[in-house]
Image (cartoon, rainbow over all chains, first blue to last red; front, side, top):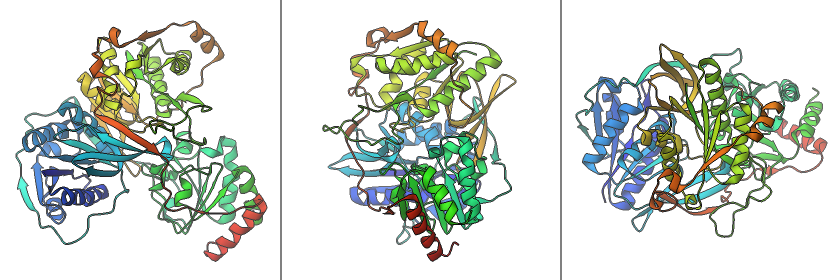
Length: 322
Length: 262
């Protein structure tokens, strides 16, 4: 029933995980609809990636162009507009990533296609396409219908789908001529910048004491510092605490920060936005303290305390001899 | 630099109990506190900082009912020059695409160098309106912007990628940026500003004033539709420890010992 495109994401010489997650979902949808799966690879000197992708797709469409060496949504949009117009795929999958968020809405708008972003579920039902996505910080899920169209666009949440597996598909590599004719001057990639490295590497710690919005005020940070010290752990935080400047960026756990897998992860006043959960859910033991019994953090925690961190933290610190 | 900032008035649900309406088309909003969406608040601050450096004007725009005036007034109190609310019963049911269409129609007639939005709204988290709007306006864009500098008339911006990495881009104006939280430290409005904002007029524009067709907005103008909302099925749940702070702490100490972390 037509072709499913998966836009391969790569950066600094590596295919990103979300590529393989999309290929897994893409295979499943292709099998369910009797369609074929095509990985779409834009880049410069990406032959190794193409070979890798043949394992998980029926075809690998390669558009090689020096102007595609680094992601640039303006260049990607031109290439994909041309490719989608020519091949009329049934569905185009992209990551709900810094790349996909920058590209999918403008591409879908230019081609007048329906788009649903940040999907955690995606299924055809009697030929119509439906997505499941989260709202209100993960407290509510929504089933969303795409308006019937020849081609749909969806971005998939990162780390929400399993990797493609099974026997290699042995797909064919198809070189497609780049439709880019001139340099894009209105938006130019200049360079990558790494986050500054601090004195503590939170990814190496056995115990991470992480604090979130529930800490409320900067002066309350000393409470959790004392607990981290009593546990011999390091202090980390979720996005709101780093945004507020109460912890440096290298202490941020989550999609845009660090991924940690300590023996113990103590989440204090962290509600558990999906972007945070991807950075800590592989920890051996997760303990969460939060006032809100419906906080999504309790879905990944092993032990939970529904209560006031301002009472629990001092009591725990005292019992640890801090 | 003339800047348009698009903002959204949303319920704060971080600690609130959420229930879905019987028709499944929305959540019950009674008792919820509404405020500007978090990333939009950073977008407003970024506009104020740019105006302080380069002069120009700030126009704040929203699509919404009269309650949203509270958010617009707060933007005026902080230093925005004018506020416009796009409002019509026929806008109800607009998805991200149709919402961007309404905003695009209002912005098209304005003089602007830069359009700012939050990178995503706290309620629907679609991260779609800003970039869609840029395409409709036919201007360059960048999503997830975490730093803005101006060099030789070109904007030099950082976009936040994953894992602590940024990419630096040069972008020509006019352009649209979707702003990521943490880019600045949003200010609070002064009492004087709040008083002044009370006297400022908030302009409203409806479907007719924008010159939009009825089919272009609401459910008819949308490319997606909400089937239903539901509370997610919880597949895994923490073992909840109960008791006084001292009791749960002593249980935790036992757990830590068993896990070999202390």
